[in-house]
Amino acid sequence: MKDKNGYITMLHGAGGTVMHSLVKNYVVKYFGGLSNAEVPLDAMDDAAVVGDVVFKSDSHAVKPIFFPGGDIGRLAISGTVNDIAVLGAEPHALACGLVLEEGLAISDFERILESMLQTCVEVGVGIVTGDTKVVEKGSLGGCVMNLAGIGRRTMALENNLQVARQYKSDFAARWVLDSNLSVGDKIILSGTIGDHGLAVLSAQQGITFGSEIKSDVKPLNRVIQRLLGEVGGVVAMKDPTRGGLADALNEFSEKSKKGILIHEDKVPIRRDVQAACEMLGLDPFEVGNEGKIIVGVVAAKAEQVVKFLKDTDEGKDAEIIGEVTREFAGVAMQTSVGGKRIIARPIGDPVPRIC
Ligand code: MG
Image (cartoon, rainbow, N blue to C red; front, side, top):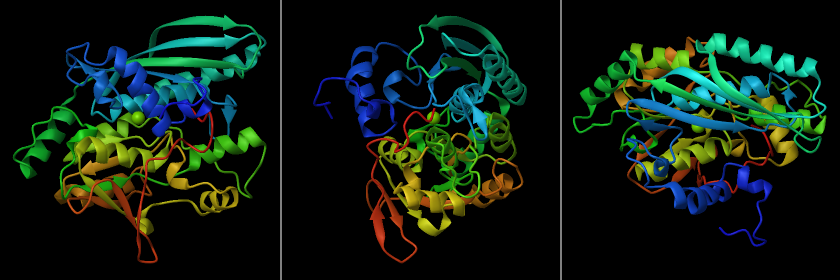
C-alpha cells in the first residue's frame, strides 16, 4: 500500500498492513538478502539469528512515558527481551540508546532508570553499552529509546525441540519460528488481551474506564525458558504487540502457509477492557499487548502447556484458543453465536504510540 501523499504517517508505525508494507517495500528492499543469517531480515520474525546468537533491536516511543502499570523504560526492556525470548533464546546482554528531550525532568529520568534496573533484575541481564543524545524541546514527549539485545541457545530450547520432534518426525527447525506451524498444532494464548493498549490510551486521553486498566508490560523470558525446559513441544511463539492478536495470528498463518481457526469464547479478555473497547469502537483483537505470548504447540502437549502456564503469574488466564487447520487459508474465528468470521490483518493498531 503506497501512501498517497508520499510521506510517513502515524499508520506506518502502527504494526498492521501499512507498517508491514513500509518495512517490506523499503527496508527489506534495500537490506534483505544481504546476509547469511540463519534467520535473516527477510524472515521478518521477532528477532534475527546470526551464528548461534539471537539479535534484536527495538525502538520505543510510547506516549506518555508514564502510564498505568508501567513506563517507557520497563516497556523498552520487556519489548526487546520478549522478542528474543519468543525464538527460544535466553537474553544475554542489552544495549540502550537514549534520546532525551530538552526539558525532561531529571527526577522523571531517574524514575525511568530505576524502573529499567528493576526490569533488568527480573530479566536477569544488564545493560552493557549504550549512548545518550539530547534534542531540542519539541514533540518527542520527554524521551525515546532504542534497546538492542543478544540472546543465546539454552538446554531448555534443545529439550523443547526434541519434544517437538517426538511428535513430528519431519520437524527440523533449530529455533521457535513463526513459520514452523503445521496442521493439527494447537494455539495457546497466555492471558487477557488489550490491557496495555487501553492503559496507554487512558493515559493519553486522561480518561478512566470505571476501574483502572493497567498495562500488562512484563519480561517473559523466565517463564518461556521454564516452559521450554519443563514441558516442550512449542514450535512457534509470538508476543502480540502492535496490531494485537489479529496481526500476530496472521503473521503465523502467512509464514507457515496454514489456516488458523480461533474460538471466540476461548479468548481471554477482561470485562472492563471489553466494555471500554465497545464504548470506544475498538476491536480488542487489534489492540497491542506487552506481557502476553501466543504459543503454537504440538497437539499432544497443549493441555500440559496450559496447565504449566496457569500455575504462573504471567499465564494464569491461559487458554487453548484454536488450532492450525488445512480447511482454509488465513485466520478465521468461530464466533460465540455459532458463525464464522475472517480475522483480517489490521491496517494498524487503533491506539497510536503504544510502544
Ligand atoms: Mg514481537
